Structures are given as C-alpha cells and as structure tokens.
Length: 280
Image (cartoon, rainbow, N blue to C red; front, side, top):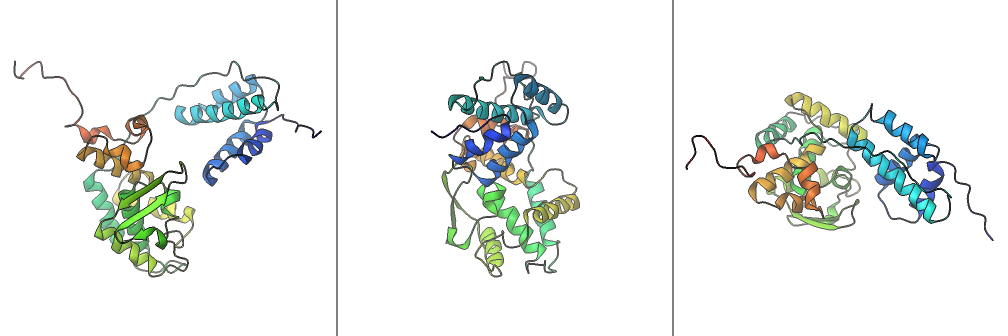
C-alpha cells in the first residue's frame, strides 16, 4: 500500500493540488508562490501571515491569498492528506478603490504616442511604433488579458475576425477588429518568424517596460491592464451589459465591481430626481 506524502507546508500541498487540474501557467505560478510565502500549515501561522501581509499589499490581494490557502488546506483535509481542518482563519475585508480607466480622448492620445515611438528596429526586428500600436489596438478591441494577447497567432485571424480560447476560463471568444487594428496586425505579422502577432517581438518584461515608458510620455497613470477595462467601460457606455460581454465574464458582478469606470457613465447611472430646481 502506497504511503501518503508527508504534508507540513502549503508548498507540499500545492503541486499535488495543481497536478489534477488544468490551469494557466500564470495561475500555477501564483498558487505556488503564495504557498511558498505562507509556509507552515497552522491557523496561528496563517493568521499571522495575513495580518502582516495586509500592511504591505491591498486588502483584495490578501483576500485572494487567503482564499488560495483555504482551498489548498480544505483539499488536503478532504483527501486525507492533513488531519486538521482549517478552522478559525481570520477574515479579511477587501476595500476596493473606484476603478479607473482611460477615456476615449486618452486612448487616442496613447495611439498618437505610439506613432512617435520611432521606427528603429528592436533586437527582434520589430519597431517600437508597430509593436506598441498593435498591442494597444488589439488589447482595447478584444478585451483580452495580456497573456492571451501575446499568444495570438496568424491562424486565429479570419478576415477581420479574431477567435481564441481564454486561457483563464477556457471559454471561446470571437471579436471583430477595426480596419486600423487589422492593418496593425498585418504589419507585425509581416515580420513575424513564428506566426505570433506580438509574442515574437520581445519578452513580457521588456513589453511592460516599453508600455510604461509610453504612458509616461503621455503623462498618464495606469498600465496595459487599463486597455482591457477601458474597452469594457466604453462598451458599457454604448449599451448596458455590453461591458461584461466584451470581457467574456460569466458573472456581471465582476465587471461592475472591478472593471467598470463608473465615472465615465455619469449620464447612465441611476440618480433620484433633483429636490431643488427640478420639476415637481
């Protein structure tokens, strides 16, 4: 009879838990990193970690890490790998700040900055102008996560339509691209050695650095993540419910709480009639 593995830390559980699941590489790395940071399995130890962590990162991050730890612990307990159930783990409140996204004017400002990024070839042969312009247009128009955007290939393009399967959810999505976006995609594919649209041009770390420099040149806050939420916010401005559909979310609450910049929907959000100066 095979002996059960000795479970003492969250790092002992994580590879066993992940082995039986189809998850993205990013999620796998995140779970593994959280398990390593927390270390020993014990209520007092986990609580102490969470209370220390809340002093350094956002409440939402700590709440997510707590959820990961409880998932791992409960799984190990249900599998008979750990004898003690997780009881008495401190609850963490996630206080969200209002979501901010770029306006249409700011998105166009970013595109203009892309055109000023220069045509000097990067080490891969791509130009900063073509690379950044394609990234901005693709991420904005598809609402895809960065990992998916950088994995897009020539084979996923059919005319003016791009189809892919979300790496996080496994759900398929299809988006129609504007002529400007198709032109930017074709410019990148013309030099692509492997059929990827953006992934061949540079590493993720270099891409993030180039995007940061681009935004700094515009005097804008935010990151590439704002392209996704900006596109969704602008879809919602055109039609209620369109923002969630644009992102491919199963739950409307996720878009409303974490992706929509409600300040841009001032004329569409509910408000009571004016008590002073309004019609009686």
